[in-house]
Image 1 (cartoon, helix red, strand yellow):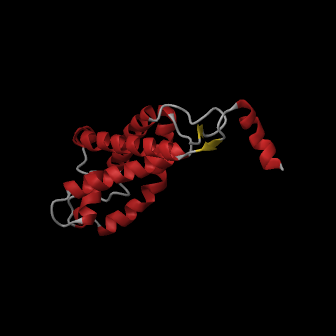
Image 2 (image 1 turned 45 degrees about the vertical axis):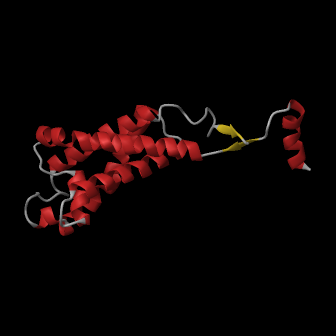
Image 3 (image 1 turned 60 degrees about the horizontal axis):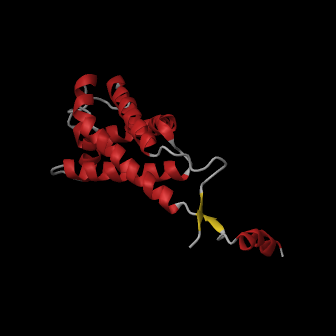
Length: 173
């Protein structure tokens, strides 16, 4: 039987059979993503001043969820989004600041058209507090810069490759 033949070398050496376990890599990626999203949220006031825009991702998310105080809801969703992105990044084998930067900027480009929807429904856009988002070079620059920050931090935190020829194998217990 081929299964027995595949396991025999482990039995002969006394080693346990190995299986792929993505769980820890995804948890590590999720934590890294949440931290990177937290760094983004903390850096927003600086980016808004430098890029001369009142737009904020945290405010965008929070404003879509509540008509009251938006900051707590916005930060919570931003951290959750970062965690999901980080888990996927790690699961797909992303590691290092270059991979993080590229992955985050690809996300910027893929999600940018959704700003047209935000333009139509967000309270700050409808009230005139924000310019048209989808056509604003400042908002696009903000998104590109903040995604770059997020991606670099994420990649630095998920710094080890998952294996030279694929995901790391972990010993089964």
